[in-house]
Amino acid sequence: MTEPASETASGPGTGPGTGPGTAHTEGFDEPPLRRLRYFHGQMLGARDFQREQDYYRQKLKLRLRALLGYGVVCGLFVTPVPPDRDDCHDEADGPGADAAPDAAPARDGTPEPTGGPGPDGGEHFRRRPRVRITPGLAVDCDGNEVVVRGGCVVDLWKALPPDERHTDTVWVGVQYGERPVEPTRAVYNDGCADTSDCEFGWTEECYTVKVTGCEPPKDERCDTCRSRCEHTVLWLARIEGIDWHRPVRPDRIHMNVRRPFGRHLPVVITGVNWIHGHTYTVDEAKALLGTQDEDGGLVVRFSDGVRADTLQPGVVEIQVIEGGAGRNASTWYMGGAFAEPTGHEEFTDRFRYRQTTRETLQDGDRVLITVRAAFLLDRCCRPVDGTHVGGRVPTIDAGPHPTAASTGPSGVCVLPPSGVGPWTSGTGAGGDVFESWFFVKER
Image (tube, rainbow, N blue to C red):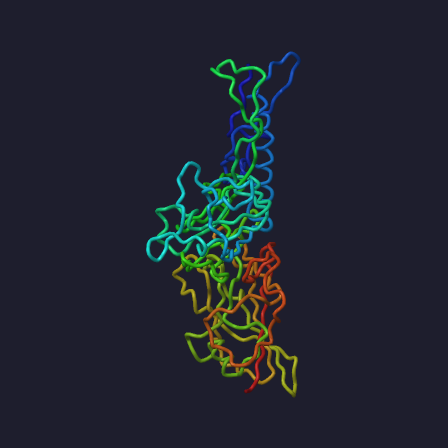
């Protein structure tokens, strides 16, 4: 009898990185894939067909997770639900009580409270905070497709575990689930069963709404292809400052906690301390560049940590394009250096770059700021996704407040194509160059 090949052996069945001369020797965190082999006269039972289904499901999940990644594909926005004058909330318990039919209860078998807290300890239903999850599609980190077909309404108080109701900040998400449906009576009794009870003939793929008052852990794996994740909930929004006696305010819902669909979550630029395309006075520009102030300088903020040792000379460049009524279009480079980080940190989520020379700006000049994001590496040694799409990276409160009207982008395209703001840099490809500029005038 031939013995199966060892999992550590080199061959077609081994995982990536196991060949000669590589440092990665771990394989896929997946059980062996075995498919049913038919032959004439074979006796097949329910277990054989179930395993055959599992074979194809595991192949599809592995392919989806390894090739494309996971996250929110489309939809699944979290919006507030206004109070309903006739809403008495006497439906069935569970966060899916107002939901679509494919929403499974959040905590099967656990009694739910019948109402929210009132000022006098009573129950107030009509103004209890609720949100709606819109229809959409997502893929969890295990490769399961989570489909919310008709959307659902979530009563935050009922969905929140009782031991977490002391908080005013909650996270809302969805998780893949299954439930048996369509019971039918078997033609033949099971040889190991005492009675001929009905069996469920189908398994319906559904979802479960999850609400928690504890900040969910982040997926910090650099390689999401070969290893399974520990947390399969897809978090959609963080809701802050909840008043348990009033409806949720739209400005309290932050959907930037959701993970976009992809193999990894790139680090992007989330804010700068100048307004792109704005016109500053000469004094404002000096304060912004840190010309005479060691605490000044251009500040760039990232969505996550980047390696501080990649902030090398040449990564950031300030170029001045001369304007004015006289000679113009000449360019010169303004000398500068990193003031932050100071060199003691391994990772940083921001840097400050200030002018170190005494060149002066004049009326009509344009200051061009370039950040070569392809040379900035994150914790997984991937480049920062730095494309400044539309010049819409928002301003952070780290510099002088402008006094003149902004000449930056207009009010159109307030949100990026994903529908979730605020804008950041990046197109999903990674690397590229972040460019921005502002203009200078005398007064």
